[in-house]
Image (cartoon, rainbow, N blue to C red; front, side, top):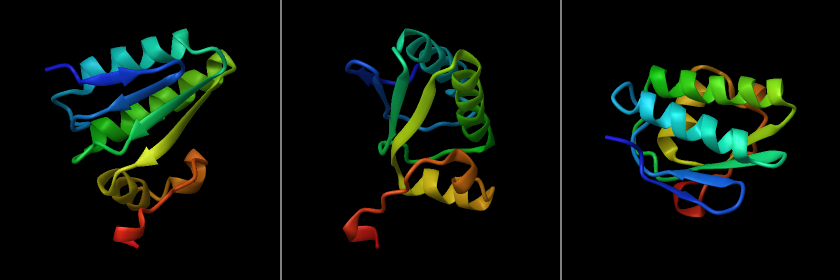
Length: 106
């Protein structure tokens, strides 16, 4: 099942799990959005309830592809699951995106 997305300008929101089951469809959506973005693509992951290694690898791919194209891919909203995976792989600093933690989760 493809990920539901909302796209406004150079922003995309993923509202489904980033797992091996959704990775192929999400890969295409994210790469297409990146190619259509002017200079920067904002990725809202606040609606992602679950993310596995395939989802993490997809984020790495999008970041790498953005650099290759001379663009920026920035995660602008992280769900708790996404923050946990970035922390598990110790990649928050490598990704370079601000990790905003909602007040009710702090």
